[in-house]
Amino acid sequence: MTTAISTPAISTPAGTTMWLRNPMAVHLGRDIDPTRAAGGIVVDKQSGTIVELVPTGGEPSGGAQSVAEVVDASAHVITPGLINTHHHFYQTLTRAWAPVADLPLFGWLTNLYPVWARLTPKALELATTVAMAELLESGCTTAADHHYLFPTGMDDAIDIQVEVTRKLGLRAMLTRGSMSLGERDGGLPPQQTVQDADVILADSRRLVEAYHERGAGAQVQIGFAPCSPFSVTTELMRESAILAEELDVRLHTHLAETLDEEEFCRERFGLRTVDYLESVGWLTDRSWLAHGVHFDDEEITRLGEAGASVAHCPTSNMRLASGIARAVELEDAGVNVGLGVDGSASNDASNLIREVRQALYIQRLRYGSEDVTCARVLDWATRGSAAALGRDDIGGIEVGKQADLAMFRLDGLAFSGSHDPIPALVLCGAEKADRVMVAGQWRVLDGNAIGSDNLPLDKEALIADHQEEARKLVAG
Image (tube, rainbow, N blue to C red; front, side, top):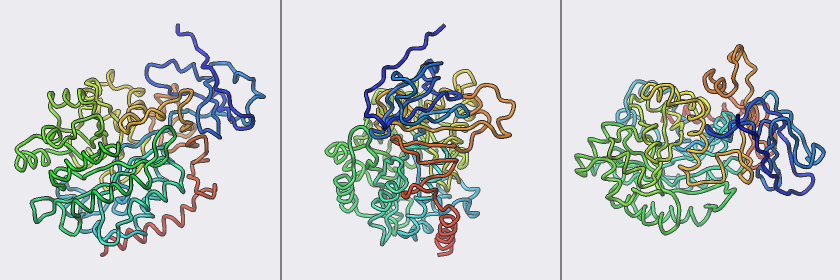
C-alpha cells in the first residue's frame, strides 16, 4: 500500500492563499499517488504558483485558518490546466463549410486558401477571441497557435493575437507562421497568400523582441512556424532554424500529416519527411511537429533520439482521413507527445477535453486498451504538451509549478451511474470545465470564460459579431 506523503509548503504572504479543499479526485500523473493531494491544493494568488499539496484527510500546514480563502472542491475533478499544442485560431470563421466538408487535406486546402486570403484584422480578433474562450471553457490554460496567413492589411496579425491573449488571461505560444512557396513555384498556396522570406524573417525577429517572455510564468511566447513542406521554400526552413537558434525560440511546422505530403517531399526534394527535416536543420529538441501520422520505425527512433516533439491531433486526422499517428511508439521512443485540437475548420471545435477522449479511442484502435489508459492520454494533454512547448513550469500539479488548474463537475446525466472520477472524466465525455484557473486567477467560473473586466464574456454579442465576419469571409 502506498503511503501518502505531505508535500512541504512554501512560505507565502498572509492573505494571498487559496485552498481548493477535498476534491472528488485529482490527476497528478499516471504513476503518481493521487492521495498526495486528495485533501486539496493550496495556491498563492499573488505569485500564481502552487504552494502546497494537502494529503488525504489533512489541512494546510498552518491549519485551515492560515489560508485566506477556502473553495469547496468536493464536487470537482481537478487536473492540471490542459495544454493545446496546435491550432489555427482564424479557422473558427470557416467551420463546417459545405464545399470542403467531405474532402481530404489537399483538396480541403486548395478550396479554403482563397477564402482565407480575405482575412481582415477585425475577423482575426474575433476568431482568436472565440477560439481562446472555447479552449478556456474546455479546461485549456495554454494554447499554441499556428498563424501563417498574412494577406494585405494583415501585417499585425500576431500583435492582434497578443492583445486578445492578455485580455482573456490564458497563456499562449503564438507562432509566426509563413508561406513562401506559391502555386507559381510548385507550392500549394495561391500567390496572394505568400510572402518573401526577408519580410517573414524580419517580422519574426520583431515579434520575439517585442513580445517573447522567458522563464517560469511566461504568458506570451513566440515561435517560428513555416507552414509545411509544400508551402515554404527550403531556404526559408533553413533560415528560420538559424534565427530560432540565435534568438532561442522554438520551431513548429506540419509534418507527415498525409501521404500526399510524403509524395510531395519525395518528388520535390528526393527525401522522406524526416530526412527533409534533418536537411534543413530542424531535427532537434527545439522542434515540435504537428500530426506526425506517417513516420516509419526508423524515423520514430531518430525523432526520439533528437528530442523532438509531436502534436497529436486525433479529431483533425479523422476528419480529413489522414491516418492514425503512432503516438504510443513515439512516446516510448523518447518523443514528447502532446495533444492539439488543430484548426477549427478541420476539427470544427476548439475543445481540448474532448480531444483527450478522441485520443484515447483512436489510439486504442492501434494499440489496445491496456497500453492507452485514461491517465496516459490526460498526461499527453498536460505534461506531454508542456514538454512539447519547451516548458517545465506548467502541465503538472506540483509545489512550485504555476497554478494552472481545470476543475470539472461530474453531476450531469452523462455521468450518472459512473463510479471512478478520472475514468469518468474521459470515458463519459466531459465537454466543459466548471472552473479554470491560470496563474492563480479564475479565468472560467460556472463554465463561462472571464474577460479583462473580470466579468463573464458577453458571448451572445461575440457570437453575433463573429458570425457576421464569417459570413462576409465566405461570401467574398
